[in-house]
Image (cartoon, rainbow, N blue to C red; front, top):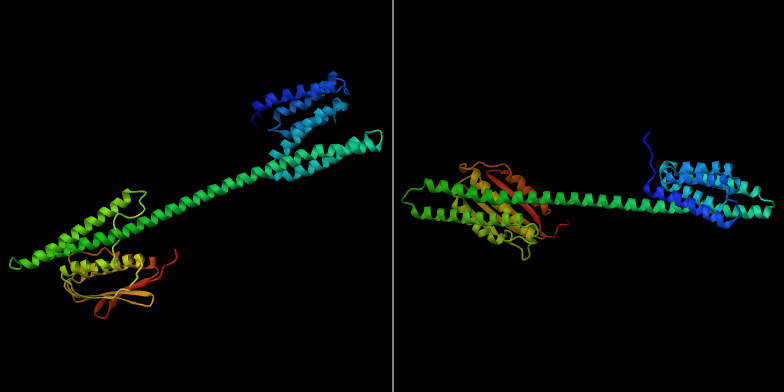
Length: 380
């Protein structure tokens, strides 16, 4: 068992309490300061050395002191020391022993009050003595209970605050993860779309002869536009990653108003493309971006897997829905760039993010991408 040492404060508090008690007894004069009285009070004050560590031991020294000098048992200095032991006992007891300690104090208080009342010469003085001892014993316990409840409430608030902080940190990490996933989808759409178009158009240039200079210039012009667009969006993405406190992205997100550039780039890859676009007067920004990325991904896949085929882009709206449909014949020759296998999943994730849905697959002789996007705000 480890040695229990008194605290520095208790090493000072115990002798000061003894000297103050002896001084009070000397001034009071009702109890002579005999060696037995001084020794009895010293025995009780020794318990003050362990008042915060083992208050029950100090409380048990009180009956011993009463046996040594019965006249001091209910003196004011002795009762004040006992009150300190009761206060520390209730304050420091474990939750398991709190209720037994309270019951024991109640029983001890009643017993001591009855014992003190019996020793008085008449019943009136005995009753007054008992009524005086009860609050002296119970007030320290009630005070300790109040302090203990405040401490427990403060601890509960501290734990709650720590839990709230942990939850906030988890939410922040989840938000960071979602943002990284969104950026990964953007990078896939932007880089894969532009670079796939560049690769397909480069293959087309290599297959043309020197007599078709106009076609070569048109394809090279499209390659240059795709390269510049890819670099611009890549710089914007890097700027967002570098700026930790940026409120808005450096460039506006892609919108359906840029669809003409996307169509020209797809035609430069060899696709024979027909378009029909009918947009509502008011279109949410998120739907603008999602619809543009779906068309971009669908045309990129068409250029990869059905180069030279006939394709069609149709965008219509009805009531509260925007319908995007991209189809291409399955008779075209395979493109030179292999697919990564993430385009379909990316389109589905983007549509679900705004409350819509996407279906992709063969429909007779064509491959069809059909997306339905709501035109109303989707609750977060």
